[in-house]
Amino acid sequence: MKGLFEPVPIFDSSSVTPESAPFYLYPNFVMAFYAYGFASELIQLSESGSFGTQAACLSSILWKDNPLPTLSPNSPPPPVLDLQKYIGQILAEQEIITNGCPWQLSACNNIAMLDLSGSYRLVLNDPAAVTIAHVYYRVFPKEELLPRNSRLYLGE
Image (cartoon, rainbow, N blue to C red):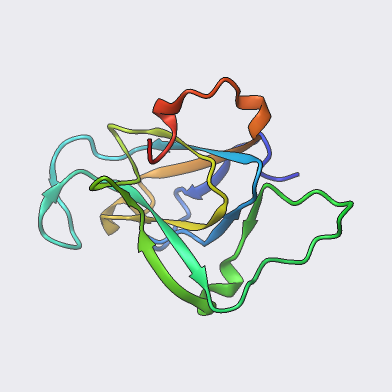
């Protein structure tokens, strides 16, 4: 099953836009993100002109129509579902922020875990990072990651 245990690229040297393809994380799985190549110093971000650090920010997506396939009761769901072909059906998209802090990967926060099922995508805050910054994910069944180290989970 692709994505289960093996690393899958979200952003790599072949990326062409600062927005990743949308993806869905099914219940009872955990997604581990690994980030490489982000600038660690304050730089002038090409999009806004302000100074900051390069980051990949996690956005939550709501759909006009549910694009998730109907699964038979006897077949396990794939851990992550690529939803790129449904991009035109996005109803709303919002960067996820908890207590004033965005959920993001950067040079200072280069590994993170996500265990909340739903539809997401990562967005680079600096288009100059496309092809330079790389982000990969691996998916694990929740029960394989116990006990839970909450410092690695987004939103905690």
